Length: 464
Image (tube, rainbow, N blue to C red):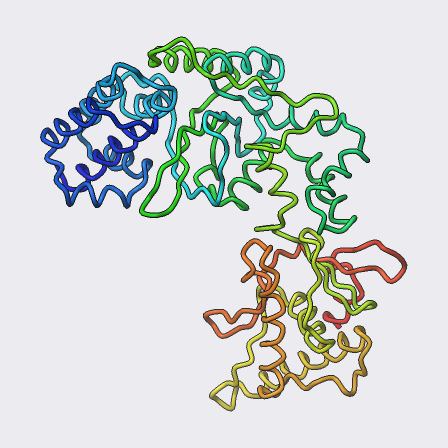
């Protein structure tokens, strides 16, 4: 047995012992036997504190020794009843271990551990997730929702299906719901509240999984997930950091049968027929603001990790990021015009490096002159005089303008991957802004409408 496998075993047993938040004499006696059996010494126990529950399971599964997983599972089962009682919290971990190590293979699943600061919901919450909308599975959930919900509820788990929540939000008086959102986030503008409201009502299972869990919460393990149930099975510490542990089991259009089988196996592990059942549900003009429900609203109202569009308004001399309800500040006309021009160049960017050979010098000078003409035209569009536009072909003028632009964008800490939104120098020496063209818009002079950058007068100046 390798040292890494011993560390993994120590981690799994440590989480099991701590699951019910009670450590008793019988568990300590069993723990000593486990340490003797698997040769777990003090150094192994110390090292086990620094790996996650999911990493520990992955290490055992990667060992190639199928018997090790089965033997470990048997010892874990004995551990949970060594005090004469298997608690609900212990059963949540045990069902995950059973799915991961049992040779029967009742379910297809995975276990994940991630920092609680990224994504954290109540223990025993079961959420339906999918990377792409699956019509058959969703139809099965809608038609059998009550049965699925009750099956989970009778096992002490709370089933969450995004469309049901959105149905509830949609059926509420719009002004009442907007007022609730404004109450929860008083710093967001009226326009920002409208955007949050519309985004919530447009939420689907696949959007929730990809945009919220993967992109905004960093739950990248779900990026390519098939239809599944994601269950919060516990919390633990990795080093000094708080982590949450999740079990994912795959489902299909026969989801009700899968849930019934899961619930049967889970409840068979419990030592008591009595446990706490979550009976709370959202009702007319009533909204939960705890656990999953709070997490969902916070993602829209607490503006963090947002992949925002960009609206350039040269007529008002503004650059606006509507999805985070923020304007670029600390930039003058010269920086705003340069940012608009760099967005026109896109990911290809512009290289300011002077060539070393005279043969390439004329081509470089023509490129710089074209760049300056484009900049002066856009500078004029922002209200300046074309003839007095800063000469960005000169490094001593260009560098402080780029530095100021970068400082301004760096303040927008609510953006997802802010580096994509600022001017960066690529490996080949080119300066570019790596924002998808579909996220860039220009305000219309005739009204409040915005049009895609490539259809705008601003882009026409760039192409001239």
